[in-house]
Image 1 (cartoon, each protein chain N blue to C red):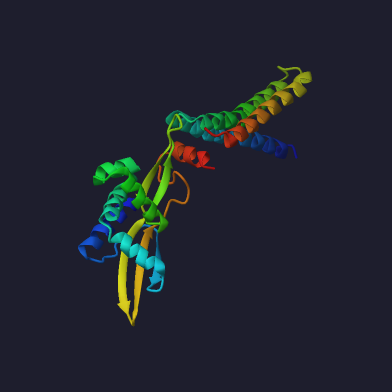
Image 2 (image 1 turned 120 degrees about the vertical axis):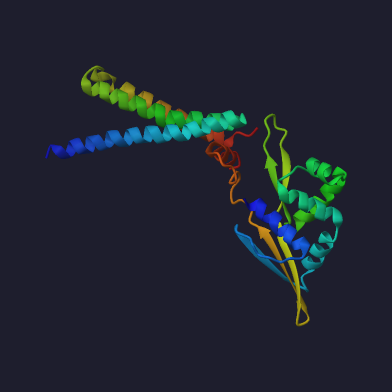
Length: 154
Length: 103
């Protein structure tokens, strides 16, 4: 449910419509121009590869391999962008537990909105993020699946 | 005066049965988790929960009924307690093992 709202916000944002039709739990971060993070977030978002990865990872959590295939990039490119995106908490990493121990990571976009305002000589930006699940497996609908993920991640 | 002990007796029986059912439900969810994810961690958790709740409670309950009805001689009282405690111990050991084992 959370991921649907990311996508709708994302399209509204890129279309230039700033409509706030978010329903899930969100939190807001305010940066001012002095914050070095603003410049880094802006330059990260100006990168087409990073935006493509965010767009793909907002639809459903994907592995780096899936992201590379979806966005038509090499895996090293995907990993480099994912690291940068993760440094700013724009994506989150989840570990997919596989039988046989071949666990791999899934990446999900946590960015749901970004806005910039210039007022009285300072830039004000707001970053909206979807809230991460508060415990592993929270989004599972089956009790046994939630139980397993919770217990395994204790 | 005699009505109160009967009521308490029934309450004890009902609570023991309730613990068995609810405990078995938790164990069953853990067992489903084991089947769905092929997770040995969940296998030990479900075994532990079953031993601790369903098995230990059922044995204690059945045993006490058999003892009270005189089907089982009263000298088996201690054996019954020992068996119940063994399953409870195995249960918590399995849960602790499940908590600490890693793939």
